[in-house]
Length: 525
Image (cartoon, rainbow, N blue to C red):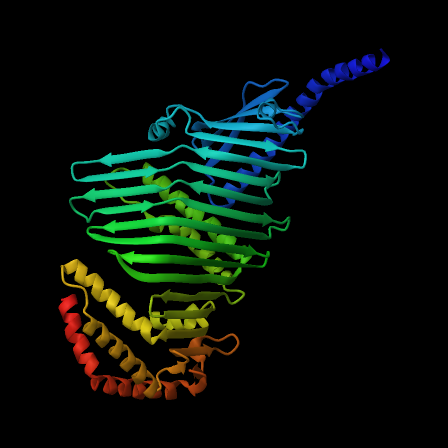
């Protein structure tokens, strides 16, 4: 009896306490949302979007649930309601219990798109009752975990001279973040998309893309240090312009942005696999590019000014009379002094452009090119021409090129095969392919004998690098390193001129060049 009474007492106590706990969670939610909305509006202002702000108005709310309406408010006072946020309070939100999740949590959210006069066109694109559904849980571990779904959409625009169509499959997004949004990750999937355009005045165009998978991961420290990483995988890409079709079986990529509070570095890598041009295989391409050592504060200030300029351009374009143009110079004028100062600060740490290696591979071999360029802010008072501006903007260059003999012959045959199919001609014969192989061998031999390039196993390679004295530009260099040896600038110019003439003379004696020219005229004229 005592045991039963004790258990009954606990149940009654919990029943009495639960509404208090749930109401407490509801109060915390409002405080947290107000803070988050304020932070988001601060970010918008930092990026120059000062004419619009996010709003969060509380709707029908009670002890166990709350409702908030998210919207946008413009500077002229117009208010647009966009999203309905239905919240179930913890510690045991009803929505979570219905889905079999019995662990306690602070609250659960369900966000949907509001149908009104402003959003009605958006609903028309999807033609479903509710195109957007976002569900997430805010746990006691101060982490937010959830998913979002966007329904398939279809849109078209027809005129007497043009027809445009756009369709996109379902989008699924899974996300996780801490409540400060300083440590986050996402995983999203797109079922595919298609863009099609036909016009009387321009060539027909069509883009088709298969399934897309992507992920992101990022972190932001209290000192605004930032790291952001992405991966992506796109299947079955097809681009058709008139009668020419390019297909790529798969595109994979990775990206990284790192901001240590002093400098920002960006890097992007991509791989394009099994590329076909009108059904003819042309190999695959790998790309590796990036910017390093950009000043953090100056870059952020530049982006903020750019956002303000873009906002002003859009606002003027929307409000101007139909027969007038946007006054771009008037919009830019007040920002030019600041942009000049910020532009100089971006170069404070001698940023570097990493271009490559960019590599093309086919059945014969590979060709790669790489160029690293070190930048400096030029002394504009000393610049007399555009050429001089370019020279004074660089403090370092490092260029290299490597090519396989069989890569070139295979590329030439691939180009001929494409041209033959386009013109309705027979595919290149065995004899024509052999001539292209002989031409590639003659080119490689002439490059080596003239010493324009070096031998590197089965490849020919070419390297060129120069570094200006401290605080100077490439205009002030005295020596250039070419293929591993240092030369005075003017001596190298004369040396290259002589070696290039020798290369031309050797190629003039090549029978394969004469025959290849005749073959190419057959396919390319």
